[in-house]
View 1 (cartoon, rainbow, N blue to C red):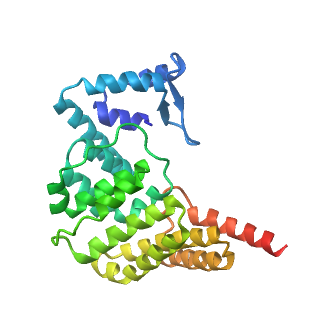
View 2: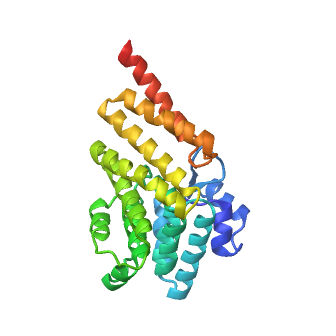
Length: 277
């Protein structure tokens, strides 16, 4: 996926808007994507050609392109894509920093379509053991690809003892929560959501504002799990808490997809109506 702004960032403005439109209108090599305008998806035939061309570039050029893409995605609220490109640039510390800065925003991993294409490279076991945030970045990238077993194996590595215990706990629980949601494991989702709620108060003391965000993430995750289990009343209670949290803490912009909790609440109300009919 790409849009004009991303292309300009990656190519330093060398590819014009007119050229992008020609790819779409004259050659049918791209297709528009999403409800909002401006995004395009490359068709498979062109993607293969471009990937081959990209791999033929020297490493310095490829690293520079990945780094530009990573910065753009990080600045535009897409941490999961930023992590992928930092890993592809073998900028391990930068990939880990995305997780540190945006751990509260990685709820997108639970529902994102599995990333296709070649997986991002993985650092050596020595790097993974010495730098906990890098390990979490690799796990996040694997969750994004749908490789839950691979993510689990990385998260099972011993802690490095260098990062704060509260952060290690937060990252581990958040990522395992995302894995449980992707598997559709309601019991595990509730388990990790409960653990995330417990972390909320200690997190708020270390990162003001973050505690409320992860609590909101936990509530919507638990509500979804209870829906899977048919516990509509419990799901409604979770969403009522979520609504109050977003209203009182000013978190209405938390869900980049736009009012995800409102949509889920509508599902609960509809299912409750069906159950009581």
